[in-house]
Length: 123
Image 1 (cartoon, rainbow, N blue to C red):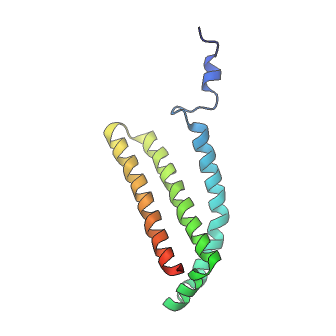
Image 2 (tube, helix red, strand yellow; image 1 turned 180 degrees about the horizontal axis):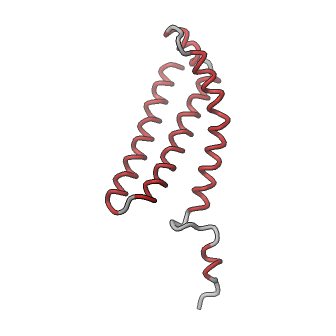
Image 3 (cartoon, rainbow, N blue to C red; image 1 turned 120 degrees about the vertical axis):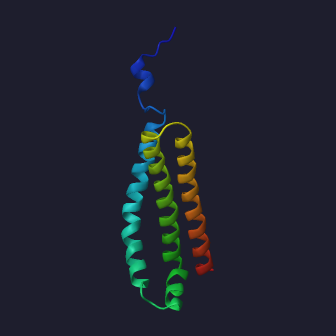
């Protein structure tokens, strides 16, 4: 005999069982990006149009390099989670699995390429 009511079993869980965690992750990463992106756009915009040596000098400093790395990682993880949520809502079966794998693969590929390029510039 179960003593949990249907409501108590459902509290905090979405249809997939991880709705609350997913919502909080997306909310926290969106707020983080809301603070990171304007500063990064200012730094990137100031480097835009400069010579190669000046751009390398800008992104070799610690603050712009760390900020760029954070924007790449947090932004791509936010993209992967959001794309996964969208795919789960609109696709079914094998196509759903393939698209989720593709979204995560694209996300990790962009993170790896971005951090590799940043390391080449900063080091």
